[in-house]
Image (cartoon, rainbow, N blue to C red; front, side, top):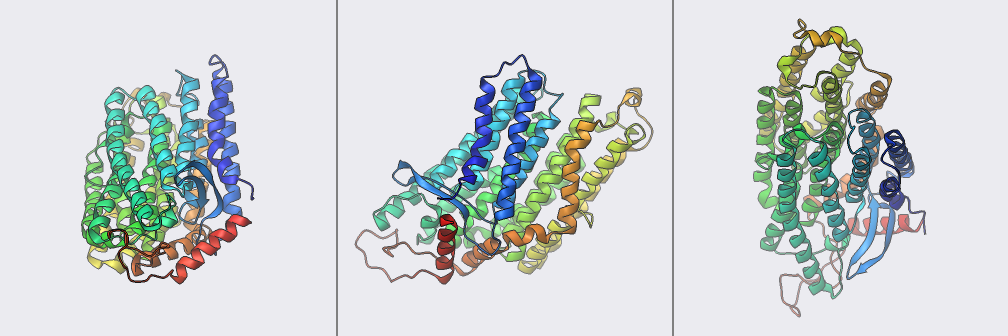
Length: 534
């Protein structure tokens, strides 16, 4: 059996959290250093995934599969081109988020870092799970540390924000759990075996009515997490009230769990239902683009502005996903990485500013660049990355997304361009009011420029912004085979049929037309098997 690299990457932060429990809370510096050490070790281990990943194989790699609870509830992990970079994004940003909170978190330091490491395990577990029950366990486990991070270390309205976030997310998650067990029951009726294995369930042949209900249940859970309009209302509150580290992880990674859920589960499991609801989903994504951009234009709080910009940018990502072509989906995955870096960096910038000014109101700033020139330079690069300046990461992602949308629907593509126009408007206007002009308050004259720690945690993000913008093939070629397989399955309704070839909406014993395993399905499963045995 191959070395269990995925288990190690997933559970090393959990081991760090357990280790912290036994350390004295009276030594905050030691707690911070050990937390950072575990987070950095997790990142270094995750680099092995990118280095050893075979770009020619569409199937999951580094597969780990063993019995767990029985009845199909197996421990089944794997990584493909869709999930690979999201794992790397998580492991990169967690140590950066920990560094960003080095001086801002003074109360309950031990508990804060325990929850940060628990959150990392939950997020990585979502991206590596190939068993739907295991996926749900990680999906729900992720909520607990985020609940405490916002509820304990958040702003004045933290209780309201965190309760709203958890209730909305759990409502969608419970419906998804019901849908998972319905799929499980249908598979058992067809084969006589229990399985939550994702690739077993890919083979189910359900009638359109059953598909529609299950698709809605999965889609609601993922739409809330993205969040898509009109399920976005929890996001601005959660962002504004969360501590800087929480906002960074929330914007950069947690939102991507929703888009990942659509790509991994909702679209390939229910391709016929997708066709029925596609116009509605595309319209909601477009509304999110325009609504988020317009709301960002009128915000008075910098953090709230960045939060609404996430609604707009995630709307573009979802519209590219629903283009259902290779360029759109590849662009959407690429833009997930870009948004994670750009928006995460903007929240870090806001956190640096808040530590000095203890306010995020735009009207309280002005002329900051004269006192903090290094900070102004980092701020400008991160802002232009989010706007989509050529040479930076956002440009490549937006071009791919818009090209995919254009191939699918020209009219929607024309309207979707508004995300670029609106982003330039609200971000550049905010930058001009905060950084330039006369000094509004005398306290700004006492602001210190960025210190070594702050430069240190922003430099890796800026490097990645330029790398993604100048050498996109480094990242695109790793996801190409998996995206091609996904698009082929959705567009051509290819099924990996279950063994008894019986439609699950018919009673046991009914006769069915014979099915066959598609060539793509054979290649997919054989490749996965080969990789597992290496």
